[in-house]
Image (cartoon, rainbow over all chains, first blue to last red; front, top):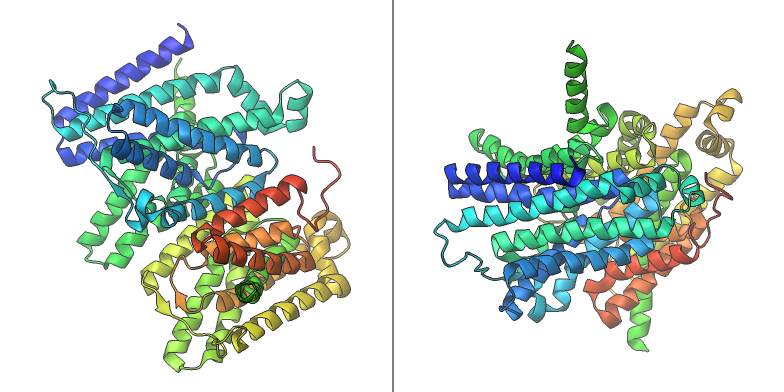
Length: 328
Length: 283
């Protein structure tokens, strides 16, 4: 069976599972399911960049920002566009921004690159203050996305979860094929030894830029999906903490693994929810509720790197291997 | 002309702060070959200690001293507990671990002191174009930079610290206690970082107050070559003045992006900074 066919079948099965799941849960959980979906896109893009190509980005929150504002502006100013075109353009815009970043990044490595992308995460959301009429200042944009087809009689949140997960699974199939294919091999060759890769005829700079383009397009699409889901885009949601949380999610799941991106995305949604429940039941103050998720993600970054560098997916993979070996 | 002069002087004063935090990044890079992304977090925590001491005792200078000592202790602890084990996991591993520490410390600061801005005072009178507080900041930075330079260039301690960072095995064979030297370097870096925090924070203290300043300081340190204290001080003042022009003529919201642009342009032309010397070959 070809790789593409296998990935497509797996994605269709996953989509069926998500649709079934959304039918039995309440609207609130549907929003959470959709949130996992768009975080998954962002983390998968990041894992392609860091795990696949060895480049670090502390700026993926900035690409989500670009995607969210692209969707917001298109919904407000070009209402005739269908929502899927808005989402596509969100990915394209962020991809272009990522290509620019990548062009600079191709010459940087390690801490230098981290510093530059951190600057992007800190600086870009402030641009909304520059154009308060156009980008809504610090309140951001609020808009309504009417995407539900006229004939379809399902709750809004269910439909949104379907749209988000269809997009997510499309992206995942694409990424899975890229990672396994010729381009994925080029990415890994550049990651492992630039000199050897160059000697084998791989254009280092171009490969790094392409990795950044793909990765940031995923970030932008994730931001676009978030805007589609929430109907808002505000600079406060795209803080440095978001970029670092995405990084934490990727490291927790297992750097370089798309399955790992799923575990990471689940953590991004359920850790804050869990923190909220815990502090609520223990009657702690809101200061603790607001900061607990960040403390958890920070601890995750430290502990995972030091103690089990392959993350959750690495643990699963090892378990699976020992199970297979145990069989006669 | 008048605006230009105001912006230049103001930029020079904020450049002192960037140079100070940049210096702490240079010291730790010299001692460990790691860029410590948790440096602003340690500075933040030290400044919060100063804030609490100020509130309890009412004296500024006691808090000042406490912050610097706390900085050194936090630096030594972070080295022993985190940075040393992380170095085994390569460049990416140490970047990620120090970022993790950054998140944890910011979150803990938010839990203990809340995310509300607290007022945090200046050491001296801050009124006027180039106030006493500004003079103090510039002096502190120049003295610290000179001290660091003397330490690394002319003392046996500095030589041992450099040896421990560049060639740990050879240094150990020559009788240098490598672990101790690395920890000493980290502690020194964090103490200078705490000093930078005390200069940078006023008038308001909140958990993310140093985020932007960290980006500017990192810009200064990277432009300066990451292991060159003089280059970093010059780049710090240069960055301060340059960003002040951007803020005054183009708008304050563009400052961080301008810092990013400066960083990218300089690194594209000189990948190891204006004053740094790159390795001849990396394989």
